[in-house]
Length: 330
Image 1 (cartoon, rainbow, N blue to C red):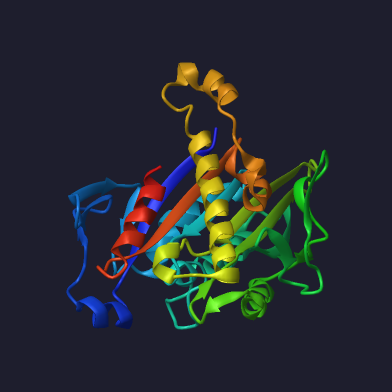
Image 2: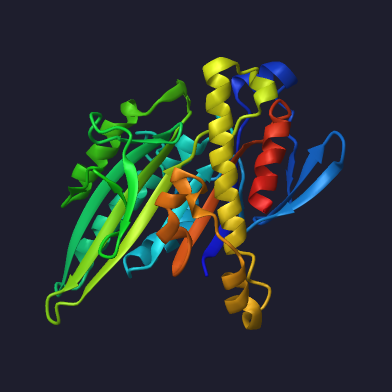
């Protein structure tokens, strides 16, 4: 049964929100590092509690340490893991995942890569490591290779040896952190942007960690998925039409499928006596979207998942924030 954690991160009000509702328009009253109240116009103060709450001033390092580090450590021991950044467009997903070049502002992706190679440098010499990277974009349910833009409309396959994989996706070996980091910088301009600060596509970064014991030749492999999800948009607010409306519907359907999968994975946790039968009884709809199919081996079974819900604290985006929080609550 998958182990799922949900965290929430609030960003400060941006210039548009301040111009619209004023600088002191926060709807959030944080009680401690796990709970807060959300002020809703209709329902009043709504209490929420999650595994961790990050306020507007939380450093990038704190987010990495709680959200990603335990999953990376498990991946080094052949336990698959997934980190998902969820939220509306402009809520801070890409900042949390990629960050900036400014000192201390690196996001989860570069910090994960750096930590892996630092771990390898200090590991027992008896272990040999191979680190492989793949990066794909899922746009309108089509999969595109971010390392090779000529590879488009890739298909998800499954076999006994490789398990579930994206057929034809580039898989490059990287012996050091600088090379891995350059890959991250290189693919950023290839992502289909909604505007300068958001994306209409899911970006999936896969790090495969293969560890071989040179004495007994045993091999362990862990897969680590880092996913910057497409923005969860409310169609009524964006007034999307035509192609934009089709994109929004496809995104929301894909995100709904992800929520259904995670919900199904946690449905059998009422008691240990019932867990085996509950897992058998709960259908997990992995095939409802390309995203959940790709992530199947790192969401179910012996794996760990953390969902980072990125939200605005301001009144201007209150409806979207409440929707994001309720998605996380599921």
